[in-house]
Image (cartoon, rainbow, N blue to C red; front, side, top):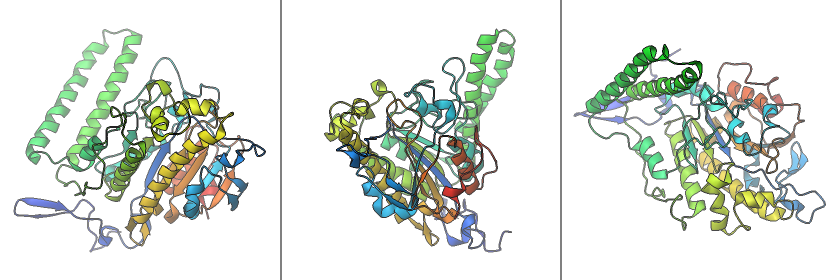
Length: 448
């Protein structure tokens, strides 16, 4: 029930022809219950699996998975940087998507958040990802329904994706990689008078309406194969139209004011061979954290690199960092002979993940933190380079939702990763008792 003192999140202060968005105030929740505050989800992906030397190997300390089980476990070298965050994370082994176990190792990233049986020919070949399913419920509350980011921007191919996010028709959501471009989309959208921007959006929507109307006469003249291709195109048009209409609803709400002085927005990781990958990743994670803190979006995905080395800028980051010989893919392939080098890549990425969750934890809101109200999934769809089972996974945050953490949980291969998505939906207050091939939820990880 709405209290008399409740203020809408979109409220603005107006006067003398200007308006300013209000910060997230205590009175913007219907009472003091934390359940009324934002619920968020992030997924961070890394390619090519992890270092997994045997327990008797001289480099056994570089095995990605901890020693022990339950609450009695010890991090190895790869995850040692996360020791101080144990109380806000859970490590898991054994999980995977059954439908992805038989496909190529480079193809499995496509299904990391979908659990789909990937079709490699004909049609988009995928299904909706968990973040986009959640966007159907949480996206209406924010300017950006979701945001897909990656070191290698775009969509990629059916088997070599550059995005984790897929719509209800299995179409990839293009990812963004430029810090400057991401910043401008999030915080620098107020260019020109609102009326002019609204008129432009109206024109764009009318153009899309005309395209859809014209397609009706065209469809009657096409064969089956062309009809399928046209429908894929029209599906994208309809999706774009929905996004434009969503943008119109937010025109009167000013974007948050963010001090960008500390952000390395002009770093060009794609063309500048001297650009520092550490600086780049931390800038991306800074932007992600600010996007969540300002409630610009509640759903984020980020690929630190793709599973296709030949088309990946990020694959060469290891050379810039002085780790091993060759790129990330080559180091992973040589992991059996040199697990320490692969482990050093694992450690570098885990440290960046640690940087992100610490940043979220330092952002305080309503007696807890942004991390406490954000579920973060970190992991890969490979255990070894081309092996699509026993995914290395960490779940962090969501402490306000009753997630216990501080444990290492070992699952058997009989438990599909989609069970985790069912539990995530439950914690985000999103309806649905199943997702793809799920067989239940995961009470051991998600319930106190």
